[in-house]
Image (cartoon, rainbow, N blue to C red; front, side, top):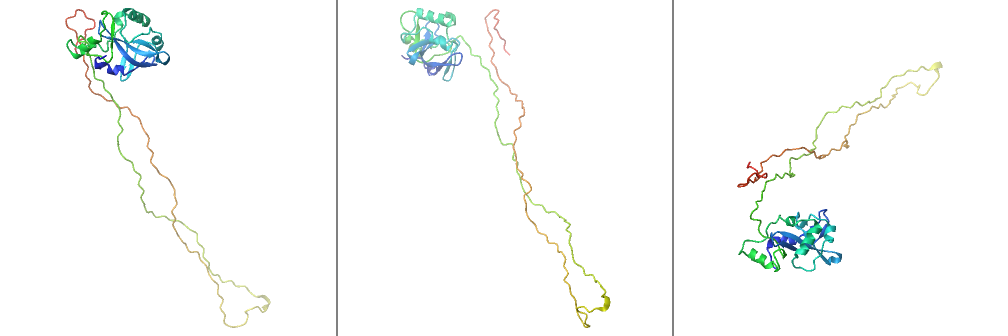
Length: 276
């Protein structure tokens, strides 16, 4: 069955319930014949995916390959199951709405608006080909995606300031070793030998060695300390660089644009907003 390609991303999505639990893959999208709004997606449930349940799109949000719905996983499993891949009947529709607690007027997915294009376009012809015979209250299945936005809606946009940080080089720190020369004075005690004449008288005139008359020389060796200096290299300190992160607060200011919507031709509209 051929459909509008705007639903391709939804059909490739995985359904998660309002608590964030995974439910299953989207198989088909069901679109209301009255409002042209998508109402349901079918998901395989039960043991080994033997059952097919319809999940309401009212209040759902879609991002990337994720479809978050506004109902619980248990309520999806307990919902009335489909017996075929065709559209839903009025009775099936009412049973589903009662089960999920939705009303007829609040059962559509307004995020996507009308799925069909203008009459005569390929999108409109494809959408018409999907609608089964048997009454305007039945829903048809969109095998792939949605169409244009609703023609009576405006999308209001605004700019948001996104601020982050980017790491860059702010400077360099180096260690450099160099040599200086200084004068150092050390006091060292030194000794030396000196000669002193000692006279000792000999009593009683007794003869002793060397008492013969004649020339003779007596000699002693003198000693003295000489200062000897040498140098050695010894490690005295280890010096390194340590980088610490310091957090500061910096304010960033910029201008952003916002769209305002005002109404024209409505009386006493409480939602009317003037331009700024």
